[in-house]
Amino acid sequence: MTRFKDHFSAHADLYRSARPTYPEALFDWLAAQVPDRELAWDAGCGNGQASIALARRFGRVVATDPSASQIADAEPRANIDYRVEPGERSSLADASVGLVTIAQALHWFDFDAFYAEVRRVLKPGGVIAAWSYASCSVAAAVDRVIEHLYGDALTGPYWPPERAHIDAGYRTIPFPFEAIAAPEFPMVMRWNVDQLLAYLRSWSATQRYLAANGVDPVGLVEADLRGAWGDSAQLREVRWKFHALAGRL
Image 1 (tube, rainbow, N blue to C red):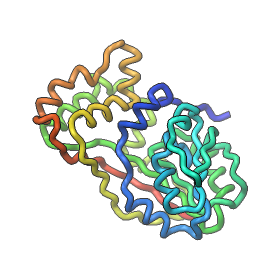
Image 2: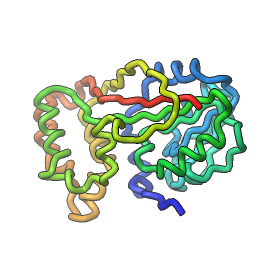
Image 3: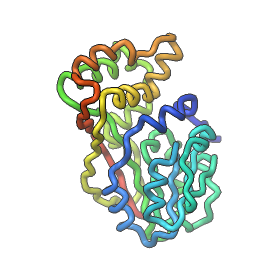
Image 4: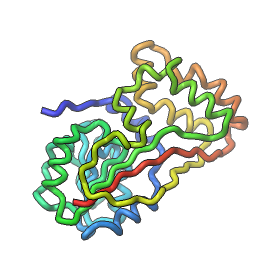
């Protein structure tokens, strides 16, 4: 049985409110690659952020996640069917799906079991796409504070080992499908400093540090971050390194 690695259920509300949104151009591009737009499967859907974007482009979306807390926080849509179940064992019918997406979650999966499930449910010519983002950047002074929080002095030891796949841009993840070259998709948000601080608190390593030490590590760097930011109401561009894998059955 595949073990569910749950790093987000305990702070599902924060995760939903604080995370950046994915580039709309990504979903437009994916919709143009598939054999049809009848049904998409968003595996490891979390709070349904990608599911909602898919629902604007597909007739139906099945969105699955093993975390009941994440599913409970997902925003409903008439054409989204949210299901609490692991990606490695879905309730989808054979050859029923035109697109499978995995947003910021593939590194948690049992690759062999999940890919077998993908091959079972994809239609001929169907597409699988997975993406991740890491290393947000604002400006040099702000970035130095974020890097200190991310590093070994604070949250570094509290990152799960799977985080290494994100840091490597998913290049270390096996992907046994006919590759589709994906264009670059800029991932940018205009945030104030409080929005950035909320995002940093949504990190799984931040929450693990807090649970282990009884101290919020973001609080330890907050004054420095606010000082580097300047006017707290000022909106700045926050950019992430965005990496996508796409393939065809």
